[in-house]
Length: 134
Length: 340
Image (cartoon, each protein chain N blue to C red):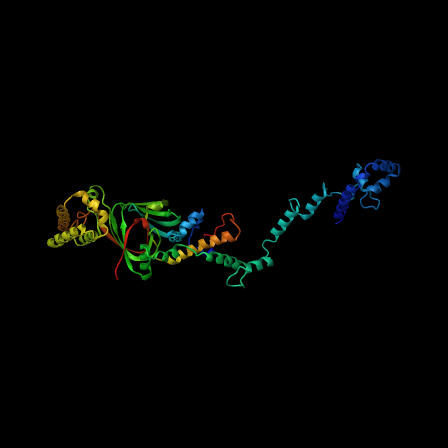
């Protein structure tokens, strides 16, 4: 767990807040985007604008939170933003960095969810939000 | 140690008092008789450490010399017991048991290890930590695990199953991407993973797309098709081709648009028919549009100062290459596996 934390300079909270969200994410490709948390990516929006920044958090509905964002609107105008939230429906593309292995990322995210679920069931109930999604 | 002895003596006192309640009436007589005797007898009787200690007398006499100063007094035996236990809560039997268990929490309990070892599936020699995951993994595997990767091969026999075949056999696919109304462009690449929403992860993607038209241009726009898209791209790249070739191509595209062979044109028919009714007028219109564009590009070719700016300031076609791309399924129009 410690080694996984070192890849992002700022530790991020990845806790799912509900079982429902975890189930939705597990059965869809959102897990790939969740594996990108901490990476710098470009998100192309439906309105032909693009946002390039570090992915803080992606939830089961593909809502994306970015930080240190360079936002280019559809007319090409650049804006620097510190924090940005994009609704899942407005996403068209997410550029995946070249160094990311897609299958490996999906498998590791699924393993994390699996581990959390087993830990929660076998360890004897909730342990005050000690969910090991990181 | 001596304090404890004294206190246990006191607990004995309690018991004797309980048994000797019936002796209460004779006490005043006893005391009166004692009072007549010498005082030291009294002192002797109330002295805890002496042999002639009379507990009842000690309890009811106003002054009892305490042999040891600064001692802790208790109201009853239970208070004394809990003090001896060292904790803060009352020493009920269940509390005692709980506290003992808590103290033993981190310590490996051999009995518990034995119980957990029975749950291990593969490796009987691993410790307690491994066995817990082993046991629960066995329970999990009893009903098959379903996640996005396992669902991919499940949809054979359906269009998604066809897409899975493209993933397995590494067939290059063309994904048509939509704008809010109509076609935006085409992504050509290999699909690595997908899900039921048609979200797709693709690699080695060549995207050809057109900027959306706005305003009047949008209103008058002919529905964009794939052929038109690549036409425009070619036109952009080589401004000013031969005139006969261009009109010939214009006729071909118009003809294609009439045919329902292109699966995309089927939903486009209502919008196509919006502008004009007859096919002849459509044909001439298409030709006219093409000729205008060509004329514009020829005009642009002349003055070298502004080569491209005048030709097409809107609705330009772009191409880019992206190594790894994730597409949200909502934007997918159709997927076209390319024949090998």
